[in-house]
Length: 139
Image (tube, rainbow, N blue to C red; front, side, top):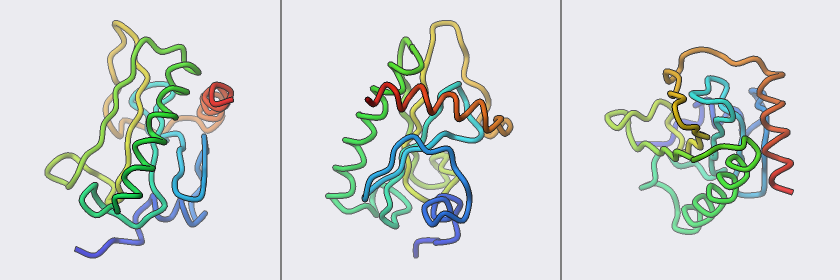
């Protein structure tokens, strides 16, 4: 199946749709999920056109997981989280809703349930506040 360059993450990468950025380099982007399941819910995507992990180059996969680890450390520290949940889905049958490979980084706290996926848009100012905390933890 050919990569769909009209997906929302491809549009974010091209600057056609705004995002609250946490980190960007020449190979990847981390930004706040606009429909977060937890405060501080961050997404990490490669700039490579790949729908699933199976479509990503070995070099792209290596960079993506290394960056995910780096951002996850910052999310945990910046959000004062007790734990982190990482999620990555491959294909609609697995729950993937955007056809561009991405990792979800969800800060977790004991006794705090995740919100429903796609449960509603978050206020941009609130997302910016979380991004600022995560960026500060990145150093």
